Each structure stands twice: as structure tokens, then as C-alpha cells.
Length: 137
Image (cartoon, rainbow, N blue to C red; front, side, top):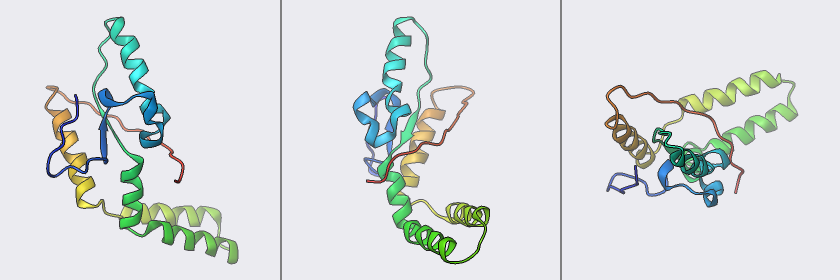
């Protein structure tokens, strides 16, 4: 599915797999960016590859900024260095920050719109997600 930007969609929050190339590593991570090679190779072999989308590193950083997570995490790590709290406790507190955080409206809208488009391409949609790591700019 090729991307079509709508008025509700953040132009850089979501990228369709069909639009990705190996040049998109910084934007969507290496595994997502390498999907273009896999899709092209399998297409030649007449293997159907389900469509999908990736959320971008930019959307992730906007999510962090909107929830002030960089500062909150930095403060927790500083506390970890200064006070005798357990590492697992600091990890739990950081995970709790992420669970309580809210997506900015533009990002939430872009993900919901992409999910809805993807849902309409199949009678019984199945989805998977995977974590990715993208380096800090």
C-alpha cells in the first residue's frame, strides 16, 4: 500500500513497507528498511508478502518530547547513580512512565489511520509488532 497523506496524518509518523528502501535506516530502523529487499526478492519468486507499516524514529522522539520522558528518564537514572535503588526498580519506573504516556494527536491519528487502511485489506486481519532500536540523533 503506497502512502497517501491525509490532513490528520503526521507526514513522518508512519511509513508503509512498500515505500521503504535500504536508505531509510535512520528513519525506521534497519529491519524495517531492509524489508524492501525481502519484498522484492520474494515477489520475484511469486511469494505474497503481507503489507504493513512502520512508525518512524521521528514519531518516537516526538512521543518522548510530548511526555517529557527524556527528562524524567534522565532524572531516574541520576537517582539510580546517587541513591541505592535497585536497577530493576528503576527499570520498572521507566516502563511505568511509558505506559502512562500519551501519543500526540497527530501520531495517534496517523497510526490509527494506517491500521484502519491495513484492516480493510483483509477479511481476517492479523497483525504483529516488534520493538526496534534507533539511535538518538
